[in-house]
Image (cartoon, rainbow, N blue to C red; front, side):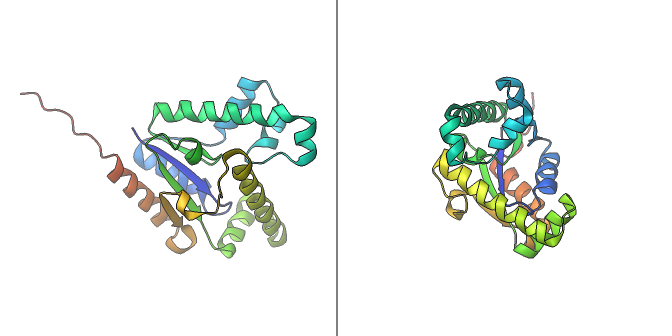
Length: 196
């Protein structure tokens, strides 16, 4: 029963890599489905849940709505734990690798050089180069703050991960192959028992 948690810099190829890894292993890939479940289970609106998704609440927000962020995080932990308990799953983002550190999981970090990230964000978000740079800057800031506030970890510290994959150097195809290879060596397929 395998669990891969993929942490990623925006633009490092996660939208391609995570589903391809799951498909190669015959597993589920869970990303935005987490938000859908949080909406269903908390009764909050999608914009409200998305406001907390990988974001730490601002100072004013933490004063005016202190329980909403805690409710988001408690629900997130429960949902991630349920998916992990089922196993054979690739979980994308949301601090899953840190939240699920008591599980036998492979914690992967996707990183890329800035030109690669800018190009991918421009393609995926249909953004200008300047706007892509701003999206990346804000996203890096928000995710780092989320990890600091809710998990007490430095999101950028490579020692917090089992495998750091530089996608701009390896390329997306080899990044997928590397993650799949490590997963297969960690959780080898069991041979069916032969009855005599």
